[in-house]
Image 1 (cartoon, one colour):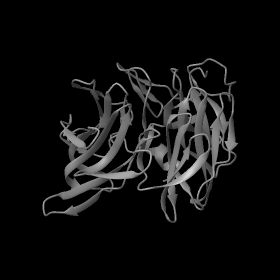
Image 2: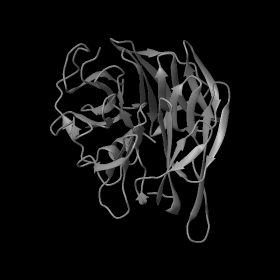
Image 3: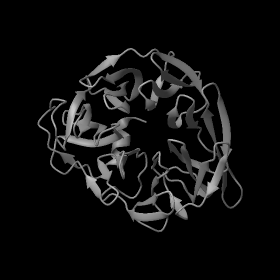
Length: 350
């Protein structure tokens, strides 16, 4: 899916922040500022990961008449974004990036022969991958992906299952979950599967079923009590290394999405981001290193929502917001007033 579509889903309100131009990377500000602009309107920033405070990777997809043509890769060295050569299989189309350290960076995508992952551990190399959904990288010997769910109609509802795959440093091992997979997230030693069972609609446009939650025990997926009943639509989620979990979900009987928070002992419920829209499809949540997370231009502080992109600007929308380790800052992909995609920073860069 092109980033334009993702942005329209994330930010239906189309709020924005006045931005006169790119500021020096050392400038201290609580506003978003542009640090990189793609060369042309045919180029779309579509993935970013920050393995270190002065280390980040991103990829740009180049399109012609809505058809993918090629990709190029960017690296942040603490001062500037620059192109880097990333060897990849012929026809590789990157989808997502994730990392656990500056020497463990992954970019997953697809080729004509199947899925593949590009891994950086001092140099880049390519490996086959069994799927491309919900790439979660926790360590060089601990990574997860999942395939799309498979469903069959049983007369009253859809019976669905999803295969997740764990990388142990050598091989991928499949583990099947009897549910429609919506998300898979992890941090530290905590890995969560978010899905739905008793599915009455597998989509499109919106999945409908009973919210289902599994937690990885180290050997198998174990079902745990979910905070909601029947839900509709995708569920953005994020975890912390301390075992906390946040879910942004919409139940079938409500008009707006709400936030469920697991503090390691109990669930609590909070309002969803104001003006976000009823269905948070495609939203990527990123733990902020403190008490909350980022999703687009919204930050949940643990107590309240902050929209960091108020009305009245030439910077439109935010997607793929990721926390910069060891700081209170974040990277995000956005769209500038020129119609070109940009990489923007929020807060002070180290």
